[in-house]
Length: 348
Image (cartoon, rainbow, N blue to C red; front, side, top):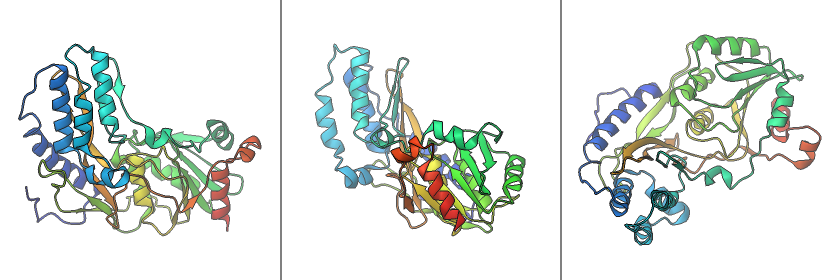
């Protein structure tokens, strides 16, 4: 399927994402349910394997990263299916099969459990401490739209963003940046942010740009083959219509920064005023889509790949400009190593 050629290449991310998602929905809805499978363990297995085989978008990236062979996965897990197995056993085998993708956007949902693979952050140090964050925020911090902020004692602004599941009002963002305007620099603490709405990530990032900026690319599936994709479509971020930040920024990251939060880091790295500090992000660079198995369980999977401004896939995460980890000595002294590094960076 060819995409339209008459659409401007300078689009808000929200519009371009929704447009491509509409194409994706049309494509997938017309073919995912084309073949019917029986509601039995082997039928559910076949349905799930083929849904992923025909519509998942990161096979090549996973092959390069750790040698994924989806056909070998089929051969190995199909032998584990048995007509007499319980629902719990069936769910476990199907979840383990999906776990071979090592993708945080891939989930299996039943009435009794949610199958997931969170190795993208569970296999790494957290590099964030709620105890230390409470110390830096204190009790008199300001809070609006899920964002917590205050001025640290060295006149560095601190903005804690734990999630993009909330819509940020334009007026709320204006108030935040006007309050922090006298600060000589700004720390955005993104650690532990598992994502949410791309539109919220876009709204916050737009306050750090003064002109339309090319921040990445996006594709959609055009066929059942593992490499059947459209051409790269530009993602362009427009500046926010309100108070915009003009000073240096340090964005703090760890392995739990995922999905829309990973996208936010991708946008911010396109600004010359922004530096990232901490650990590599968790990735999650595919817009998810859902389908259903014969037994009613639903499966979510990455179906629409996104790339940074250089055309590099960020599914495996984004490395920080300055790799910094929490140290045990600092923790015992009540100091957050990553925050302190960012404060020194902004004070230079």
